[in-house]
Image 1 (cartoon, rainbow, N blue to C red):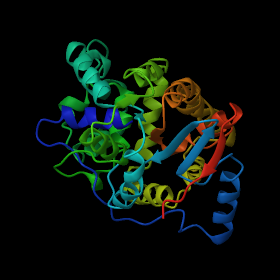
Image 2 (cartoon, rainbow, N blue to C red):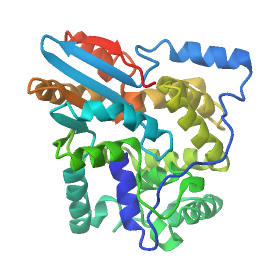
Image 3 (cartoon, rainbow, N blue to C red):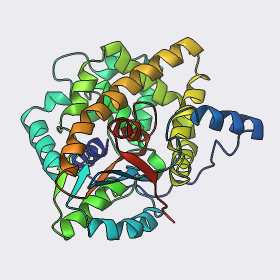
Image 4 (cartoon, one colour):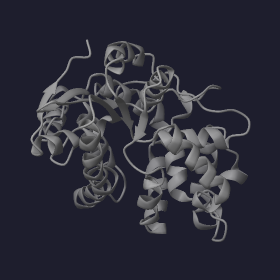
Length: 329
């Protein structure tokens, strides 16, 4: 996702988005005490549901893991200060996508714009209902994307754009925790390597049907009016180190959408978790373990990949690593 956010920034000719602090309310905190308790109980059913900062050890191998938040936030400064000594001692920084992958992606898009632009099929205003297209065009305009450009974007890419709340856009460069760690590593000539090929997410979205991709837009638009509140809720959950909580909260939100039964939500969330998290987690484990055999390692990736029976921590534990939570204080 960090790579796709960077790609979005590069596509805008007028300004590049950065991610400042949104003003909104925490929607989880606004729930009743009983609802909050039930939501946390559901999240706690997952392995390693709480915690962003971990260490995995086996024999002489040491892996430090930090779950990241891909958008900017002033609270990252405290995390970066805590990680500075780690960066000074590890042999490699592993991230979802590093500078080399970003350059490869930019070159690939330059060579083949059809990866994110529909160059042959119908445009979005041709396949969406008129009222939905108008709402989408307004949402994109709030993010600095003109309608003529939006019209030909592939639906899955539009859903990524909608995931960035307009309240957080400014004229600067994306500075999520991943980007800040990469910059710090480069400053001290620490090798930065990727957990997966730069085009991994393209492959995932290519497997989705056109209808499934359009559903992603419809779902995102349903929450557009609460984008600032959702951004605050997600950030607060991350910095309270409750990554799994936001996943369960999103499930709760989906149940409020028209036509979304418990069965449909369970099915779609299971499919999304399988493709976006579980399959990728499994593919990362050999990469992490191979790098760990060469010396101490810092691994940084989206915080939600940490938790769950098929989360990175549980998969490492199944391979014989001892897992210990570290403090970010």
